[in-house]
Length: 597
Ligand code: ADP
Image 1 (cartoon, rainbow, N blue to C red):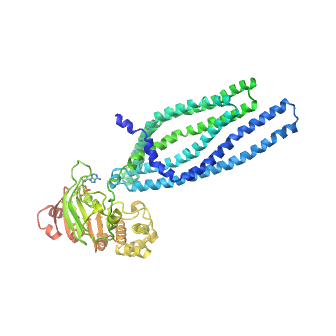
Image 2 (cartoon, rainbow, N blue to C red):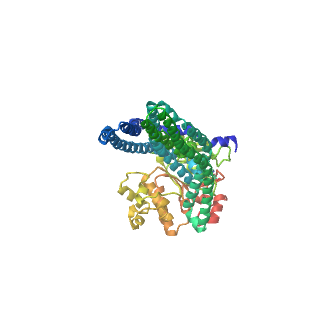
Image 3 (cartoon, rainbow, N blue to C red):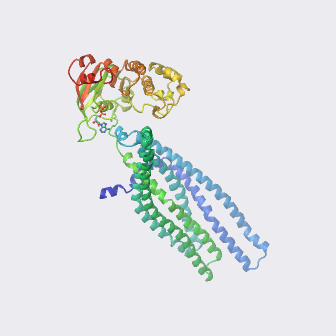
């Protein structure tokens, strides 16, 4: 692996902290309010050994002085009452501490996922075209999990355990400084071993996240293409591939776990060894009359606090590393600055007339690569219907995607009502330009919500009216729940024509002055084609429409047909003009006459 590559696998802790810190700062007073509760919980925890150590000393004194039973009971009874009270109080405070820590974790998470989702949705369209959705989802879920866990562990447990540890250390020194010192001896070992293991496993952990993202992407891909998988009877192959990925992750995980097994064993060793050391030193001190049996018993109790707290913190370190690594994997996306940005002083445009000028537009997807669009110049007048026609890969979709500014021209400009689109407020621009692609038309929701998506709070009447105009109302009413019918993911429960008409109803409800539409290529039966055509003509009415046209009926009705080839406009005109002269359009027409262009 090259040096750079290796470096890439290290966790950028600072970057991760900068990503999550604002969500913690948003609840700083809540965190501060938890400090005294954690402190109180620690004090109650440490108080217990102090009490039973004292009880032992009183019993020893009692035995030495030949006290009778009632005198002995009298001497220890108040301490037993305090002990019982302590147990009750410690239980209550611990419950309060846990509850509010979890509440904090959920509040911080709410803040974080809002920022995260907002940022991810704000990324350039390019990112969504390049990243795998299963991989994105995996990153999102893991990051969410990590933030919850960091709060639950980092604040709840570490803060609590740190107070317990330092409380125990301070208290130990107060009771007997010699035993206090002895108790600390084994602790550096476990920290040193853990630290080295953290450093060693960091890279493997990061690589592991990559494996898991690949697993997420594969599972997502298989579900999305389940028809192809089933049709090819490739279920077993798909599972085998998953297991191959899994075992790569597994092998890597085992490398990490070897180190943690050593840390885990060291922690156990420290616990037992520390107690032994305390016991031996205690026996010596008692025998030489330097301390009491009660103090030794107190220390054996305190050892649970010393080593238990360290153990509890370090036992969670692997999970902590996993969380850091999950967040680290998100950093690249989190810190990527969208190319499509709002202008510094955006121009607000409420309702445009729909005049569009392509002014010498050229475009490449990646710098230095060949142009996908070249020197496109054309003036579309308000209300016109323009059909883009050309062979696959000619650049039609790319040109269409520039209108809602999913991409900006590399050279040249697109003007809307005389204003460079880059200067217009993004919200206004996208409100004015409706964009419908042939895929992913519908959400996994009811028909009503699918239509009303563009106008939340739209009245039932408005939605029904839009559906009627899109010639889909009768169909909707024939479904079992009418407008409340669930359409399934991406509308799988509907036919192609039904989906498209619902999507058209949505456009009619949004009523944008400009519409960009990628027509479906799928062949429809003549009745559906006829219904859809009627709906389309209704949608095209009174607005500027740019349609990537595959359907002959649309092409015939267009005001102008732009014929595209290899990123250029090679011809233009009305259908009747274009079929009369030799050229690409005529060729298409001859090949597919009566069908699709
Ligand atoms: P059409 O819609 O006419 O079929 P496209 O606009 O989809 O053509 O594609 C034009 C060219 O741009 C093709 O060569 C295609 O491979 C390329 N292309 C399309 N989308 C992307 C993308 N997201 N990244 C890189 N290249 C792309």
